[in-house]
Length: 223
Image 1: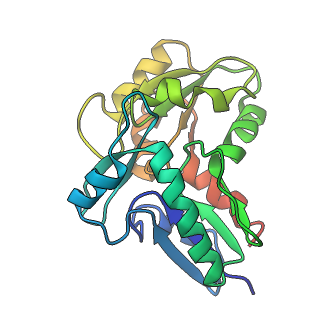
Image 2: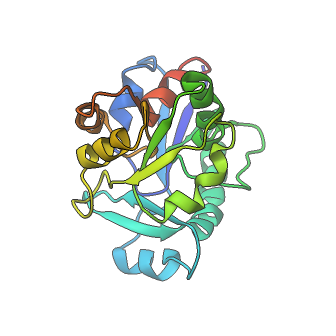
């Protein structure tokens, strides 16, 4: 039997995400959870992962339940080191717990599963010619993450609502805004959106695709 490693860009374990995986994975499957920011204080995170001017941003969750915005390029470099450690610990499959785009992550032997490589073609096949509305955590990601949605038949429309903080639109408000603009299917484009957020978005009366639930079901087929 193999071992599944998960890598969050925040701090592990992710109590919000691991239950979603546990509902579809075999109980006896060994798991090892790691995070890019494991063991770091907020001061250390600010020092090593502060967003660069004009750079792409990511948002993630810390063990204390708070969120932090970090630089994607710096995160990618640190994530590569963590992937090597998970592989050295015997993980045969490693799942990134982030839907953001990473250009250079790689493993030597382990199967690396990156949601941003799976979601676009899968969602495109599901929605076909319908108008997809995408809810992202940060407004800045509407431009920085847009390139990955090229497989869609129609350009998506976006709204921003964080799964971690109460600033800006709520998930329900973002979903309603997208429905009013013509979306017929919604996608929650962040691993931090959980079932509670799906239910809030569903109040807009549209089907809602929850990224982490979709990825968990796919991963369960190969581990």
